[in-house]
Amino acid sequence: MAEPIVDDLANERRRISAEYARRARDLGESKYALWQGAASLQHASRVREAAQLLHEAGLDPRPTDKMLEIGCGSLGWLADLLSLGAKEPDLCGIDLDRERLANARAALPAADIREGDAASLPWADNSFSLVVSSTVFTSILSPLMRRAVASEIVRGLRPGGGLL
Image (tube, rainbow, N blue to C red; front, side, top):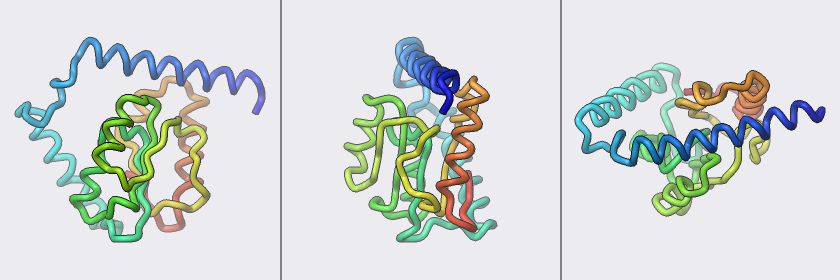
């Protein structure tokens, strides 16, 4: 990789991490807690819609299907994938934030949850039947990083796999 590209990706990682810290400080943990009525309704709606889309595409989570969530945070979609039929050892996640990952690892100790960014995924080509990237691209401002993440998603998906 050329030096300006490496610098751009490193700068974007730092910017995103700083934004995570700002949001945690300014918004607190309860803003999106499921005991909040609006958050609970939004969560139920997105899971229902995702389940329907996956079903219509023939991508219902099945045991032994490896699934990855990019930007898994404290738990994200990983718990939802369990409720849709995935098995914990088949779940993988990646996020920049070490503290949020500690929560995800504690909740899902058998899942493969790693610290890092999706511009360079640590898994082999064609590893996943499903990749979930819920709000990742809205958080990335760098066009270079967006392209790198998109390329890594494509590389990681098995033929016939899906992106949610």
